[in-house]
Length: 178
Image (cartoon, rainbow, N blue to C red):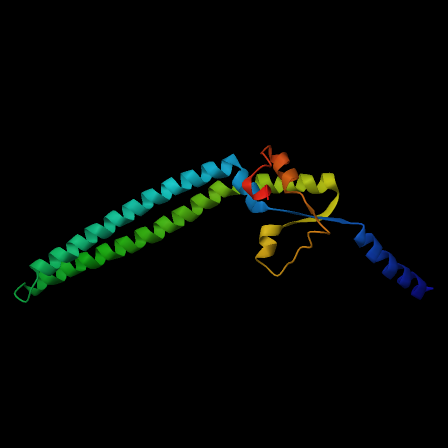
């Protein structure tokens, strides 16, 4: 009796899995089509350029001080003056290093802060499509292509346009008009 039930479960399980729908979507195409993403990227690029300009100014100032040091300091320069100027250069180099690290940290925080609401919007849209379409799961095909996961396009539905529709954006993005 138990063998019969077990055999029935083994035969029925694959059939029930086969009846499940699987879908895929192009996260990058959805992301690129979102106006909020374009705005965030423009703002982040502006912030990055500001940080980069400040950093280059600091490096230029440091280079000028190094050149001045090399011109003015020689064997006849008293040791205490030479040591003080070398200390000033070392401190300035440390400030540049700290500024670089702080700028990177600030940029990463700004990127995360800007992207989090966008990712939540996309996730919510994908979840709505999953529920409405009664899909077992939806896979981001851009992430799948960078991993060992392979998606059979013939056995899964591309729901990128449905996700975009949920977000209220046009489904005529260049990535979708292949």
